[in-house]
Structure formats: C-alpha cells, structure tokens
Amino acid sequence: MLSKKNQIKEMFNSISLKYDLINQMMTFNMDKQWRQIVFKIAIKDDPKNIIDIATGTGDIALCFAQENLQVVGIDNASQMLDIARQKSVKFENIQFQMEDAEEMSFEDNLFDVATVGFGVRNFENLHQGLLEIKRVLKPGKKLVILETAVPSFFLFRLGYFIYTKLFIPLIGKIFAHNHKAYNYLSSSAEQFPHGKKFQLILEEAGFENVSIKILSLGIVNIYSATKPQ
View 1 (cartoon, rainbow, N blue to C red):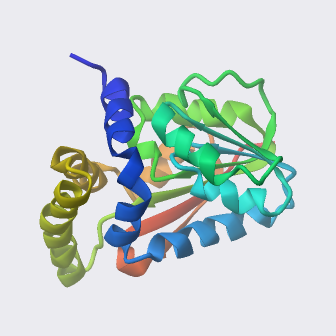
View 2: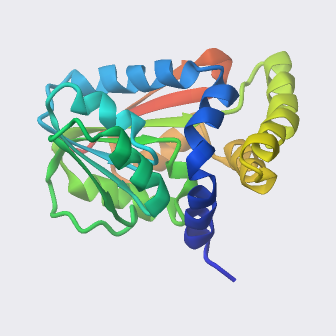
C-alpha cells in the first residue's frame, strides 16, 4: 500500500489539468481573495526571498513573483509543477522544483517568508513538516498558512457539511472524473485540527506570535507565526 505522501502525490497529479478550474468553482472564486490576503500579510516585513511550500500550480508563489522578489515554489507532484512553470514563463525571479516538504534540500535559515496554501493538512507527518519549515526560515521571520476550517456557528456548519459532502465530490466527478480525490479533499478539511488546535500545534513546533484570521464565515483560516530570534 502506498504511503499517504505517495497517495496524495498521485492524486494531485491525476487532477492537475482541472485543478485551477475546480478550485475557482469550489470557492466561488474567493480563493483569489484569500491568496491576496496571504500575500499582504507576508509582504509586510519587506521580504527578499520567499518559499511557497506545497505550491501546486503556483498561484501564491506568482503573487510574489509579480513584485520582483526571489521566489521558490516546491511540491512533490510533478504534473502540478509543470502547470506552475507554464504559468510563470514570463518571470525570471521564480523557480519551481520537486521537494519533499518534510525533508527539504535547502540550507538552514535561508528564507524571509514561508507560505503554505491548502497544503499542511496533506503532510504525512504534520509536526515534522512544521519543524522543517522552521528550519529553512531565518530567525524572526514569518510563516503564513492558508488552510480550510469548519465553521463554528451551527447553521454555517450545517451548510458547510452539505456543500463539502455533496457538491464538491460531484464537481470533482463531473469535471476531473475523480470523485475520490475530491472526497478526500473534503474529508481531510473536516478532520484537520483547525483554529486554536492548530495554533497549539504551531506553538509545539516552536513557533511564536501565532495569530489566526478567520475568513468567509469560518470556512478558511489564515495563520501567521514567527520563528523565534
């Protein structure tokens, strides 16, 4: 049986051609706004070099590339990276490469900012992945994570479960011909330890100054945290 890491790699490769389209449909195009908020939080400290982890098709990384910053986007799904490279051909300040987020090839204390968009819940070992991100960040620098959450208010929560259990797998089946992948994406979002639970996990991994920004009625959170000096 394949490890979780390899199963997810194969899954994302299989849906890569439709990934951007279905993302826009699933989020009613709000994903663009969420990524811009990640960008604005990350850019506050005037970074010079950025790593975007689990970059997928590169949308968060491309936000930084437009600002003439040095950007590296990493992922373990080669076909997702192929699309990211196609989207970035006009930029000379960005590169995409195959990496295992839990065992990166970069030296210690290298990057001014690390971002992760909808990726940490796919780590095989969440704690190890966070430790590795902390390792490649410079002391005092920031990690910004965009990740799914489950609304706390009852009616929003009910609507969320109806939407994720029925609508998301359906559009995955129709447009990507892969309802299993989108079943996984909805179930993993439900099971991920979001909010205060994830804040505690970040603190246990050694990050400090953790803050949570709740967006879109609680269906996504943006976490920012700092590597200690």
